[in-house]
Length: 582
Image (tube, rainbow, N blue to C red):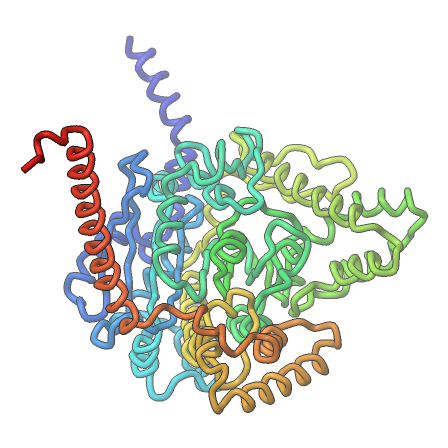
């Protein structure tokens, strides 16, 4: 009996040892448990009501009891109306603990509790860099207080709450929810059905998961100016598309400026996710926010990669180079194309470009334009990258712990044990943790600063902004333009629209079509006596309509009743004349 008990106890220790080791590897002197993060937001918002408010947002479909925390941070003394809104989501993937840590510290800075963060050694470089960039006047709190008068931060600190708890307890490779769904593949743009055992399985249908539905509800409830989805596993700044090997054509004209400003802190690969990441992702929240909700500045940020993976100094990410090579070579062999020397030179010597597209993808796009490869072949390269990436995940994070054999034709991958998952997605030391947190808190504040300096009202009207094109100067909304047609300012507006159109055509090509063209056409061809139809009926007009209808109705009813009585009396006299004889 004693021997059997000892054996059973040993088996339990063997089974759980991996989890215990992984959990113990987390530097808890830096990281926070899920309960600590949620409690902080609840308690702190109760004591800083003029700066922060906490809400539990339930599932809008009422299909589950799950709710997600939402923290709104702004200067409530100046209200929320007219401010630029940034929606931040963190913790979609359970193993990416660092993402929620970043919004934890961002909240601390926004609410004036930045003393601990500013005591970190990395804070000195942050202050120096902020000064060089000319961000804000005075100290950090002066800058933040000014931002909160112009910007509203809406923060979902942990989107996958139960998953994060499991990762904290040792399931350090867990990516999906307990229902087995990758939340960042569960959105309605380019969603695709995938196998249940796929690492990025997006659920049985779009928005099958309450977490996705809740974040969607939050986004639809506010005029979101920027959406930031926070992840880890590499260093990167992504804009749409995730689901196409292209840069979205209708992004804001200054998107490249924003990326370059943010990249001062990251110094990492940045651009369209479907190009720079080296694989395509379907059903992502960033693509949905851009395509369906017309968010002007949609972003996905990857905040940490092991050994600087994704940093420009390390050459970016080898995935989009090495993993695409076999498929590219196969395509080239079929088409008689041979650019292996170019690829080898690039892979060995050239870092990933810091602009919208990296060198290798620029080369591929050039081949498409020159006709040496087709667009279909380029898509095949992307598909090969995605499949290989999935194979890596399955092998690296298998229960066996050690990565299996390399895929034929691919470079031998470095073995990764399951116990190493934490350090693959999260800074493993206190120093790295502090450096990552400060860098990305600064990045998010820089984004807010750009939005505050380019508010919606002056940047473009909301409807024009959804098409990512500005209106003519002096007009903030198309409705304003309709009201002013026929006025004394019409000719001035016409001249302004013509000037804008000429500038636009000269800077972007003669075939450019933008809001200035639309406005010019409206000014020239819209009949002067019709603009009122575009506007709401005035209160004065409406106040006379209803009494008039009521009076006419009463008169008609009275006339009908009178005529009916006369007809009835006449019929009686005709049918019964004796009754009416005198």
